[in-house]
Image 1 (cartoon, rainbow, N blue to C red):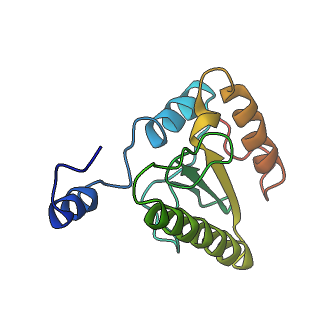
Image 2: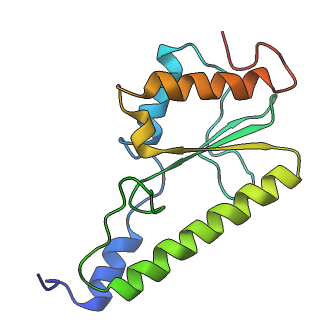
Length: 146
């Protein structure tokens, strides 16, 4: 199906999409944090790569990656139109993700990337267990727990 917007209008529309407050990702993880009494996190913390959540005392950063925008191996569906554009876009996003993770780890931060699909009710407990292991390996033994 052809796009009903001009290239310029489509570009302006896509630029208006914000990268925070996405209900299927960041807000869902906030709900999980509250449900499991995980505390100490901050949002909009000024770090390279703009992590979604930062636990400053533990030096842990969390990125919640959307399955489409970050090219999830399980759920990414390649668009049928403009495939060269989208292939390059997703590849750039993945390269940027690797560079951000590498840079933060080099600066002494533990970087955790969570796929959007790991926040569903069915697998949220696995995600929480993963996060708790990260916190247990951080400098404070009871980090992140209330």
